[in-house]
Amino acid sequence: KKKHSAPGKSGLTVAQVALLHEEGFESLRNLANCLIQTGCVGAKMCREILIPIPKDPNNPARERLRPLKLQEVIKKAVMGILMRRLTEKLMERGLLDTAQYGFLPGKDTSLPLMGLKAITDFCNYWRQRLAVLAQDIRHAYDTVEFTVGKEMP
Image (cartoon, rainbow, N blue to C red):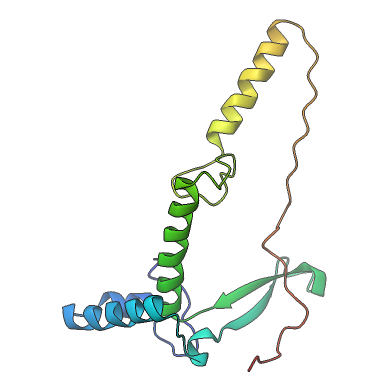
């Protein structure tokens, strides 16, 4: 993880965790394993701090905010482990479309863009018509719910 990411409410940072000796890492590993195996997560672990940040400093309108979510380091680690495992299982079973390049580790948009370029070049060379529809859902994960500030039980 990034060593300079903002901490959750406890103030514990990734940089501080990186300074732990083996015994400290072992304690965190045990805690993470316990959380994963039992599924029991304390309420404090689930708390997040959500800070709405203006996308444009000159336009602080509510619609132009993006969320900055501060989570505990251990929660980020456990969620990362679970997401990696889930993604691997879904890929193994063919349940994820490999065209979903946006979130798969080690994937990017270069391959689909190369395919689009090849088709475009082909159509240009053979003077064929080509219609392309590209959908870009801008900031799909970049919107703030307007129930910000309500603490959940």
